[in-house]
Image (cartoon, rainbow, N blue to C red):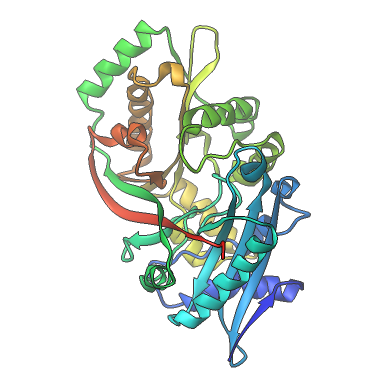
Length: 374
């Protein structure tokens, strides 16, 4: 007997958050998220995205044992302004039991029908800044801070239930050369002189704050043509400042300005926190934060989180300037490997950035969709 329970109490929310930690307890590639951070995403009083979204969270029980979870999400900007009649699902985890998956999906479909929506798609979060995609390649690769991990059978469950592929994300592992390549240096110098560009570097995290709004503006411009795009709202920017700034080491941020001192491109790289989060086991206190702090300064791996380039400067070689600066930072910090954030397969402009480096596409993610109209 499978029962689906709508999450209401704090105890149920905690069970929802902890379920994948139990499911993948002995999996060496699973990276537990910070429990408090997960809760802050889900609770209305802590996440400003609820100004334009609604969410429902469900737990699945089989013979009184917790065996699955799922979130149903409606982003009203996507529906009312972009005219996409779509229900989202995310935070999807389940044991290898097709019936459990079917019951969880049905719970979310019901909400979609009640709101007269036409399709269901996921796994995704509330917006582009949240985790997205079901892992379909790279099950033997260490997960990252900003992605979900899942077993191979998840895709089989969804396809069996009639889901079709909606979008594909790819991730790359890049080997950093032991010296900055002469070609990169030469191109960077040419581009910098031709377009009168300057590099902007930071010494302290707080020095970044005056430039964050412009960075998000560039993100909106950079990714506006992609199929999953939803504009980042002002109140979300404020939230992300508070959420991510403590994790950002200023040495790993590169900004490029034009002759008017306007930021026209930027990149954010972070030391990899994957191993640190495994040691922290989802908790910052009392000692988890020490693992995070150590990873910021002693690390041979970095994670490429965000890059934004003003459309006016795209395809003009500005990336060479960013890569030159990053490469020199990596060499100083002892970074030998970089892992990219998931990028849509269709986003060839971003993938082209790695063409001059020794890189391997080591992971793939997909989202899936299904009609919910009877």
